[in-house]
Image (cartoon, rainbow, N blue to C red; front, side):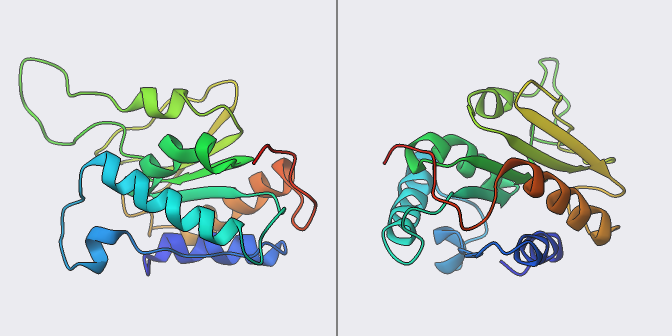
Length: 177
């Protein structure tokens, strides 16, 4: 939750009038370094989003997002959450450093399944790879690697310009819930 790129993205959203909730992944809260299986991460995230959307944010457009593993969770749960957009910081397209005869497994299907506007901010030298742009997906590369800390201003500007074009904060959501 304290990653510098995540903080830059959150501040960019706040500068446009968005309310921002930062959520710690459950495995991190438990003191573990590696994530739980995807179904458990997704279920925990969905509960948090339902709680937030049913409270003070009820009826507002919801943009979900995360960095790295959290970006994958946001993609997988966007439809169930009723999100109007998805923000991915450092999406881990494939596991890095594997030297096998078979290519590493791609996580591109998780991105391709998102049916709402999506921004992926990726380091130009990210060892996890750089996903391609698509019809509903804008990919912005910034200097640096997976940590996205080389140019935080570029991260913030990418988020700010994209958010300003996809959703107006404070307007009623156009989504089914």
